[in-house]
Length: 312
Image 1 (tube, rainbow, N blue to C red):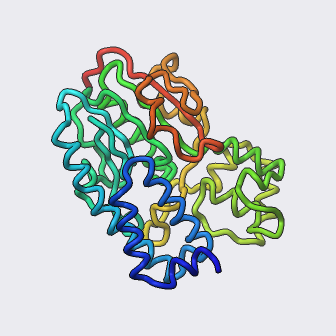
Image 2: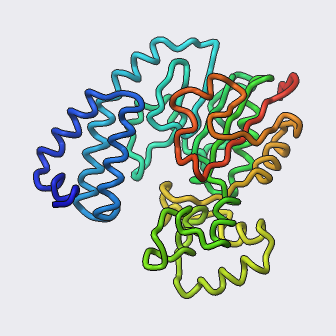
């Protein structure tokens, strides 16, 4: 009997298990339930009605279990110190505010977020200039359209205090690019030629565009004749139709050179931008539990410090 057949043999038992597990677990233990949900999704498929039913129940009980903990944390915020997790979802640590966006795909209860903001629509972050001490963002920016990225970097620079830090982790498109060139199925988590096409897995790393199996030949030609930046920009449109492509997809690409260029254009000084590594932040705060825990094998880690007295 498969794992999925056990879980879906009795919907009431499933909901009871989810509720009991969530109420009894906090922090990193909840990640174990995430792994379980993902394994069921991989077994049944993301569009399977039984999985979609599980997903709805999962979010309902998870939201409920976390609300009291979030309210308690808010009562103990130090208003003089603002740490911001951009796209942090259910992240909870003292003095950390979370800015994310509730959507049909990501049905968080809005009361669990400190700021419910659609970064593709809102032009300003909801903070005064020079007011945020630290910003951390893990695997968020690749879900935002390429066209809005420069504006977001300018806003991050604006709201950071002088001496404030940004730590950014995103999928490293350079790693995916070279993994595809060498035919590395393991990097993309697929078993070999009998699995989904390697080109499909590669494009899914940074692009939500539809995959046409017949286009693999053109892709292979382009990757040989275009520069890396030209290739990534061609296969990653600057804008996407949100009526057909939801926020679960990757619609943006990043490598160290692109992040550095965006940061410099936003006002950060080149000498205060670093390529970092897994759990290697220059800030001890950002090396602790809850940070850098999302797919480190294919992640890019970048840090930057805002310098000077910037009043604009």
